[in-house]
Length: 288
Image (cartoon, rainbow, N blue to C red; front, side, top):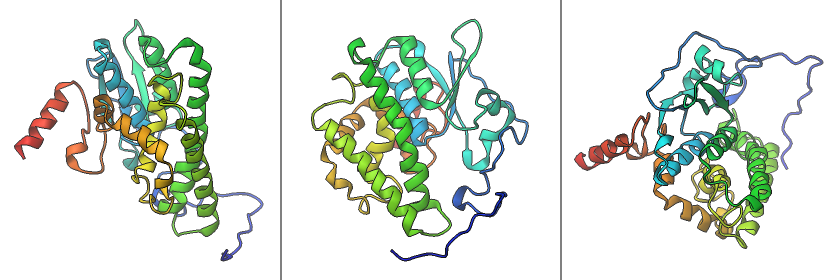
């Protein structure tokens, strides 16, 4: 391995605003709001403030799957939070998520608004509220285990491998190798499990699949960080087949469009306030 210039940490760390790569101008060592900005509120029971990143897609896929399954009370307003512009540091957003990360949601279906933040917390709140996509009770430990696996593992894929491979100021051999190895180990964990199971937990499609798919399904389809060849994702055939089964679901197809701001325009729906928004999008595409 080529040895790069060794870094000697100072006795006391100080913040270098110019260091940090693509997101360096936004990341900071303190919490709290940077500016005053109220959040919009629509007319539906659930108000979602998010962006079409993997963590955001988890929740919009669940919303669309609930609606696809006939839960009409799951209608929601999806408001776009542009993290590249710092919207997550507005006072209204910080009020519902003090951690300033998307997604965040306000449940207004009861007598008092209830805030919910962290993607899996939102998913569990909704799945329990509607009694859907939780799998059989006997498989609850398996479901929870895979949900926690996703939350603990994905930072190594995104903040680890993705950052150093795609977003760091320059390519560094050691961290790229370190996190590529971990990413491939995680994919192998999934591949071995899905070799013997159609879905992640209890033989049914659940929120565990919805939580894992936007991160790892996207990766094995070569859509993460332009690193499909580098990671030899073709080696994970069982994960690929599982990802394709989810991609074929109408709810998943719609969910990945919501608040998406990259990729083909026909796959983006920046804000979603009703089912008719998808119909309008389709008609616009036909009109083009």
